[in-house]
Amino acid sequence: MKNEYYSIALGDLEYLQATLHLPYYNNIAIAAQQVAEKMLKSVVELSSVNCESLLRSHNLRALYDEAFKQFSVSPVNRGDLSMLKDYYFDAKYPGDNFVNVTEAECEQCLTTMYDVIDFVHAARNKLGLDCVQVDRKLLKFSHSTAKLSVF
Image (tube, rainbow, N blue to C red):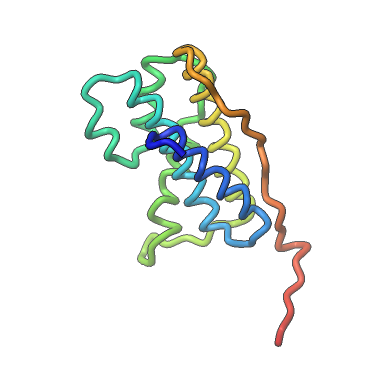
């Protein structure tokens, strides 16, 4: 793994995909947010000037807007980015805004993350940079088919 956003995001994605058989939707949603954030930062870092404060933020919409100014490729739904951004805190820490991510919401998080990866790959192609092939893997666990054992 290289010391760069793109490589770290790919490592995070590989780990996330290895956990898709588990019923921990909050953790998967948080991981999807992290992959999307690092992917966007990988493009912003390469194409924007004076972006240090943006690179320290977790604001997916702001990161996407900055990247989109440079690369008007494969648009991503900004509302979906907001939803994914909210999980960074709301699904991670206790408090008034804590949420339990549902299976459907988790699938939406994964779809949005993959849309961001497609956007980043299109931008990297414009820059003449290599891209790693990413398969769109979705959840392998469903509460509707799960059976719990009680000891």
